[in-house]
Image (cartoon, rainbow, N blue to C red; front, side):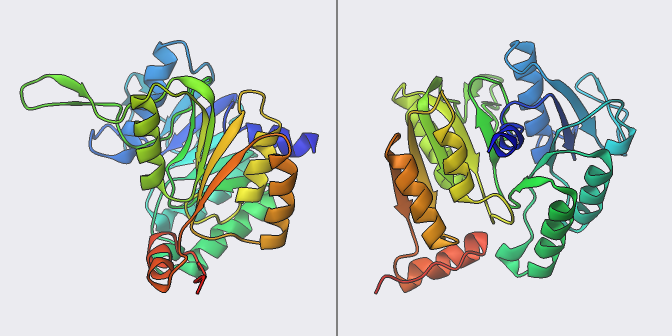
Length: 283
């Protein structure tokens, strides 16, 4: 259990992060995500080492850029992947060689559009190397206390007038953890909680769930001292008996509110097109 908790903790409190696909182009997800880390570093909230990876750039936001994660000096324990889907297997092989412990694959273009073999290839590489993976096709992680922020939704935006306004507010630290398969639901929940001045401990977006499951995340959050209650949004439940066993264990100590979609045939079709999930009808 200790080894499991330590590896899962890498997603939320890493020692060194590589953003693979970091970009200077402001409209790119890789730009927004890397900027999130930079801003939180300037706020003295994010305290880990930070490395942008992009073979076409020399520097990004004042940070030396590396062509490959293999060129980074020292260890990297968390990778945030924001490159086109076809390049992800190659990146995963490099992460395996670098002995990276965890990866969040923000990139879409996998099982949600029928590319099941590509997703399986990525999952197989990760499994063989012992890398835990969130995603693909996800928003990743937001941790209010460590400054890890993989959301490619900018916190502020600049209007045509030049005024900067809040776009996607981040909630303050608090006792609520959000575990969601839908990034859109997760973003809406964060926005609502921020508006109500309700605090969040951790936010996790699974996407296609190629590796890390809801059961594992609930088990991890059970041992997280900052989390007192969990809000979960699921489009599919894998290994239902295992999930119920974990849920019973967790809810003896911490409440879990679970919203399950795909209860109708139409809902199941929507889930399949969104994250490639097979959600059964309740009829």
